[in-house]
Each structure stands twice: as C-alpha cells, then as structure tokens.
Image 1: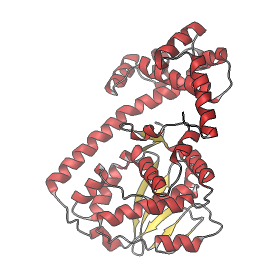
Image 2: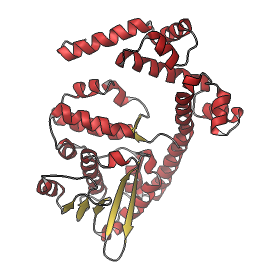
Image 3: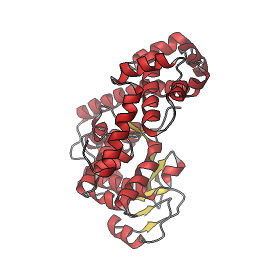
Image 4: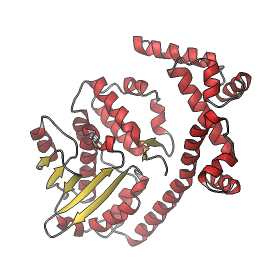
Amino acid sequence: MSEQRDAGVMLRLIYQAMKCSGIDTQAVFRRLNISEDYLWKEDLRTPHAAQVLFWQVLEEETGDPDIGLNLGQKLPTYKGHVLEYLFLSSPTFGEGLRRAMNYQRLLTDAAELNFHIDDNDCYLILTAAAGEVRRIGHFSEAFVQGVIRFFNSVTDGKFKPLGVHFEHQRAHGQERVEAILGCPVEFEQRETRVYFDRALLDYPSPHHEPRLLQLHEQYASEKMAELEKQDIVGRVERLVAELLESGEVTLDAVAERLDIKPRTLRTRLSDAGTSFNQVLSQFRYRLACRLLAATDESIDEIVYLTGFSEPSTFYRAFKRWSGMTPIEYRRQSRDSEEKAETGISA
C-alpha cells in the first residue's frame, strides 16, 4: 500500500489562511524543517501522517487552542482544480458529487468522502485513514469548513449544513462552533458527518456542458494514472528504508520483496520517470541531511545508517548531492538554526 498523502493544494489553502491571520509562517515552517518554497513544488503531495505534527506546532506557535476552527474561517474557497471542474460541468450537484468521489484521490489518498441517503437523512461522511489524524480537532474543524465553503461555491450559495458530527472531543466552545458553522454540532460521534438537504442533489449546475465534462473526466483519469505510477516509488522507498541496515539494498532484493521480477520493477520505475538508483540515491541524501541537521550522530554512524560501506564513498556521494562535505552541511544547518532562534536573518 502506498504512503497516504495529501495534494499540495490542501497545505497551500491552510498557508493562505495562516497569512490572512497574521501568523508567522516562517517560524512554523522552520520548526517543521521545511522551506516555504516547498509549498510551490510541482505536483506536491505531503504525508498525511504529518498533519499531527503540523497542527501541534501551529497551536504551540500561535498559542491558540482553537487554531483549526479559526483558520477554517479564513480558508480560501477551493478553486482551480479538476475536482471543481467536474462539479461545475456535471448536470447536477449530486452527479458532480458522485463523479468527484471517483477521483478524490487527486486531493488525498488518506481520507475518504462518501455520502449516505435514506428516507430521513442525507449526509457526507468524511473519514481520514489515520485514526490519530481523525481525532485532531484542528484538522477536522478546518477541513469541514473548507468542504462546506466549496460545496456552497459550486451550488451558487445553496449548500447549507443542517448539522455536523465530529469524532473528536471538545471540552468547551461548542456554541461558538455552531455559530460559525450555522447549524447544530455534536462531538465524540462515531463518524465525522455533514448533514444537508437531499433536494440539493438535484440542484442543476448552470455551468453544465457535456463536452467539457468529458474533457474533465479524461484529464482526471490521466492524473489518477500518474498517481498510480508514482505508487511504486513510495513502495520502493519504504523497502529501501527497511533494507538499508542489512546492506542488501539492490534492485533484485527490492523486487523480491515486492514479489515482482526485477525487469518489471525497472520498467515500472521508468514509467514513473525515475530509476532504482535515483530512488536509492535521493532517499540516502534526504536521510543523511536529516541525520546531520537534526541529530548528534557521528559521521561514522551516519555512514552506516545510510547504507554506505566506506566513509570515503559517503563523503564523495554527499559532496556530489549537496556541493558540501557532511561537516560543512552540519555546521551550516546548526548556524542557520541558531540565527533563526536569536532572530538574526541568515
């Protein structure tokens, strides 16, 4: 199974909300050990499990125990993505919703959106795959507001929640949550749900265009195929991490663990625009950078942890990757961290 990731658009929306709220985004991203430039990386997909650390750091930096609820009010409307186009070019809101669910992995492969209809109720079910993430109130309260705002946008202001259920606990402030969402809210429920009027499923889209719908579905299918190609890269990276300590990090060893032929693995990686040697090299580089910047491990230990047999081989590889020796990289990382902590610009 591939590592569960969110499309970069989700993080960018939160980032824009942070900026609108006057939050020191540089301080937050320094603590997360990433550059703000990272947000604009093409085809960015971020590890969903990192949501836990992200919201923890955000709460600590702002001192706001309701940071998710408050940022949710500042979230820009989700626009300019193929999922929005599928809604707009479908004949009705319900048809758009059904189509979007077929391609929701383009937004995240770590959460699932479904909807339920019976004689009495109609509601969306929002499920994050990681249980720990589901219980983060910040994530859920911001995400639900984003979903409501998006559905309101594609229905020309007609979508209004009739009620919301959250899985997480909330010790206080329920009345404020209800005032913000504009409906009754219940916490510590079995699922996160957004109830709405089932008549909205038949709401006609004024932008319905069959030819555009066909083009949007074709494009969504192509993007899904690209993601499926990239799945193999994530699986190889995880096996590389497992095999590094044994020293048996070869294409044949990884192919055996994947239960496929080495030639098949080579072809699938090529289809994904990379090779086994590139995946291995990039993984070793990221690991080495993290160990040098964030730990006090000796160089000899880092040589071992990154799967090199000789320090000299590691030194040459790291110099080729970064343009610096490992010692120079560690020193620069420590200097940058000290300057950031003392408020001196690098």
